[in-house]
Image (tube, rainbow over all chains, first blue to last red; front, side, top):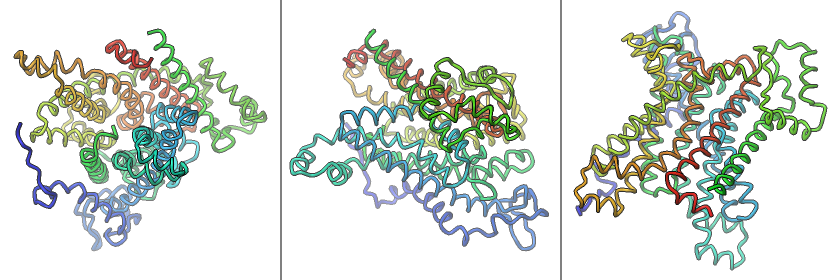
Length: 283
Length: 307
């Protein structure tokens, strides 16, 4: 057996592993401070500067990443697009996570008929391909910021429920839980104070990986015209219009896609690393 | 075995019932689905006729029973937009989507499995870490972006492959890759963890001691024992591919079920959208059932443990 050398986290070599966090932080700063970072108004059209290549200058304004079919600045739109992506993904992760964890923990702790009903419901939701379920629901409710969040939460809560259920089953028979119950603690108290802190790790891993997936779903819905509506800058809808100009203006699709890829990749890398640290409970 | 089949079959039927119920209630989220089911050009008479067919004046439970009855008789309704039965419309698109899904699955399996084995055998070495990075990149790639970028490079700049449409083998290459990348990542990860689990077992050590080489070991011993998670993930992947087809087919103008869904939403032809969603769910449920049965054959322990 060869001994494995492990580096304390502050060593330079380990710091290199933090680059996904750095990328995520940059995109988060873009989202939070978009009005101060974006060089131009993302919605301002300039029909004299349509489809210009990156680096184009017009009346003192520089289009660092080029301009789109209405002469809007791609760089500014990419920065504002981070707002839509991150906020939609974040809120749908919170919403689906809270609902899923409550359902899963209740099923795993209460057992009996509520377990059967809740987990069958989870199976039903999981058997509809998520993006199809999202599409049919948006088609009924209509597109828009709030509806996209609701729809994503509606389609994704079962994943958390599955994990929370399995973890709760594993923890529910531990001596400290039995003790708490014997001392008369009611179910909500046991779940919140004794079980949740012990199962939160795997749930965080799922949430991180789901964040990346939600970013992809939001962009996918926007790409199909079912997401956040124009003229609001969103990466998915930028890709959708840019598709018509692939031959003449490659920059319209390349840069929003690159931003999207970076955001999802860093979320997945962080989730993967967390998973290795915390254990394989999320699989 | 019979008992196992009945039990799993019963669960699948309950899931089908649940999906139909869910779709029914989603349809009624806004209260009156008449507007959804008719094109914008519908006259007042059409609307009244539709209301009568749906029986909207009757109580909700009666409407629900009717809907269940229609589905049980495989009656998916009639599209007012295309003036054809929904079955005919869907059936004409199925072969195209199957072709695309098969291409994507082939790419995912042929590249994903070897990558997974490679990562397992080289665990703790840099090769493994770099391969994992590549796999995560595939997993994070938005299908519509990788599709557009391939069109840009291979279709527009190099002119090697056709950018859109269907017909020849060359048309199939880019859409299959775009659709297959995510599944490729899943297969690589599942294979890796399955093989890593098997590597630690006694039979591997004794095979090694008998002088079995790495190649033979992987093919004859490891793969056979790692097959169960791979089979069960294939069932999930089939539904992933159906869902992913919606976007990939839009990018490549591939005339399958996915493009049909998007066109139907644009044309407000909700009956067709609803049928595609039901079809996708049924395929998923039956793929899972098939996987359960298949691996109870591969590994009898699975069906015995259910007792």
